[in-house]
Figure 1 (cartoon, rainbow, N blue to C red):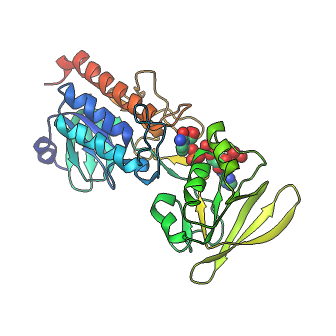
Figure 2 (figure 1 turned 180 degrees about the horizontal axis):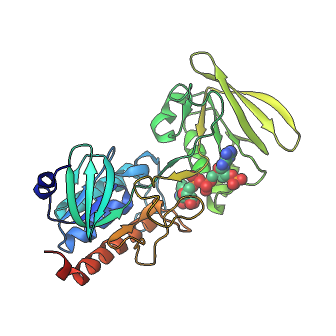
Length: 318
Ligand code: NAP
């Protein structure tokens, strides 16, 4: 990086890394508040929400929305207030005095403040066959791949909100959906549990973990270990959807901010990390409730706090 490159791209008040619901909400608030705002996204505007089939608890929308609908509306709203979007992968965030230097795969930018809204990615089972059959029967996205399993038999691994909601979604296509859970009680909230227990297409494989995934060209068999009975068995399926939690995408800052034991970023109530002018919002932070609406709220708070922080430090920026 040369100084010229940095100077060429100076002048942002705020760089937002990640265009999921948290980043998009931050972009709306910051650009409406008059901050010159740039949003970097490496893949898909909308983040994890775009691979969510149905969102039925987004306040104000009693009709079920798709994750894509929400992402689309948030992006249009941020566009309206003039946020700039760059489809670039952020590779590093440097700090020089109070300035932050963002290096992407396409350029180098300087900014006064940053909001990290990089979200999280699905945890892998890490069992034999998982990698080999990814895209050939192993999936982490029912919305993307569910329709391929019309009248087939699939399994969902996990007992949280994601696993159970997506299992219910898969019953629209599959003739049978096994839920394989390592305990005998679902973690998912009551409203989701009640719904799945009424669904006749769902069958439960309790107290069990998947030890391996096998097949020919495509997945055919799951090797299952029942922890209570200490028994191994095979389950014939056409596909397996893995929803066993999320891992924070914290690589850009992990050694410089405070993390909780699972790697989520600790912020104060203003979404400030321990780096002055660096905020975090959404699934990446330590919090109790991971929802679109809480990501919206984090993003709004982070943008407001960034604006306040820039104002307080205005004499230190030329
Ligand atoms: P989660 O709540 O962490 O649930 C993960 C599930 O996977 C748990 O049932 C866990 O079992 C199981 N598990 C974890 N590691 C495993 C392993 N190695 N082998 C087998 N099973 C394993 O994750 P999530 O469902 O992805 O949800 C993430 C967050 O998003 C949560 O805060 C959730 O509330 C939120 N969310 C909300 C909604 C909604 O409100 N509509 C929808 C989706 C997600 P144990 O139960 O035994 O720990």
